[in-house]
Image (cartoon, rainbow, N blue to C red; front, side, top):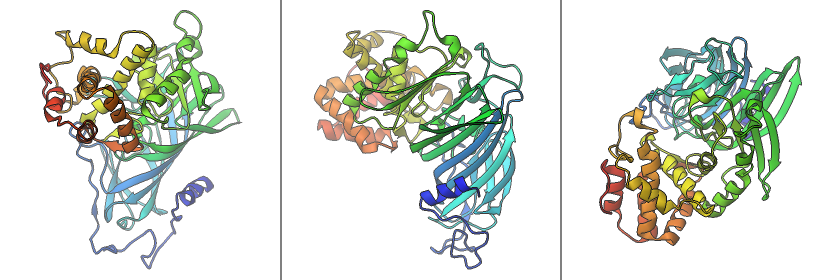
Length: 484
């Protein structure tokens, strides 16, 4: 274990693993743990309705340490990963989500472990079972050319190579990488417990050839050049779901600053997008005002910095709210930037527990677009609602929370109908109680996970109303509501 890894372990209050533990008194254990239960295998999925094999049971990750390097000419990624976790049962073996890349070495608590692979599932059998409620350390060395994931709706996900001219590479080499992991892309570039319910802190270092910039979540703690390469080291000190991690690489013009209230900003723009009528600078300049506005509406900004990564990668087809540094595949519209910043509260800090609850992310961010535009003197949130409600081709036909086809994950029912649900609720319980509801929702579930059922319960508590029928017609009935 290197000095950095040892420092992380000690900093988290863990003990560096010993090479052996014959007495069974440390991180290793005998065949029966101190609670008297025989070790069993952790599950190879958490049973999410849309992605049942995503995530794994039997442990909780506390921290990921990644030391990576990338070669543009070949597309090869080399990684040294350390995972700090705690067993939630006595484990004979456990799984990690990890796609395609070759595992060169794996150790658990300092001892070599056996592995088996089946698709995205990497099954790890430690030399000795792991104790329930005892921390353990996994070290993984890996390498190879990452494979971009293809989502059920056909979208690219995870590690997405890019060219300087904005086109999609046709071979292994590229000029950069657009990294956006929702919903199943994180395991394309690191081994993870890839479920939104297992949040952890991260520190990630990426070494790239000089001239390229590697941008991750949280704070840039060091940037070191040596021998023709530069290593960028990022630390995210706040809990983060794996799908929100990024390490986007390319040629970027970087501007660092602070909002009027002192929040650090980090804005990276592909130089090919600067200048001309589509220069993103005027929109990005509004980020401090957007953060301040949403802070006043929802509560203190969740993290220690905010930024944006604007890449020239239109073939990707979307932006993503990667924690603290949303990534954009083109110069974004003002509404898109508001949307992704709002996700820092709703989606990143308050994170869904099930992918069927995607409206808790997208509906809240879309409604934030509406209320921002209203406050800027544009179309009101109620007018947005009325326009969608009058549209016969509006967001009807798919239930907001009961859909079972993963291809519908990013459909209009989560975005538009989710926002309409909030606006209808605002009208039903009144503006003051609605504003208090959103602030309380954030305050209550900050840095954790939440469900639709919990939002309904909180809505009823704050409003003093019984709202089963309201939420049934808006969230569960796929048809257009006619009364509520």
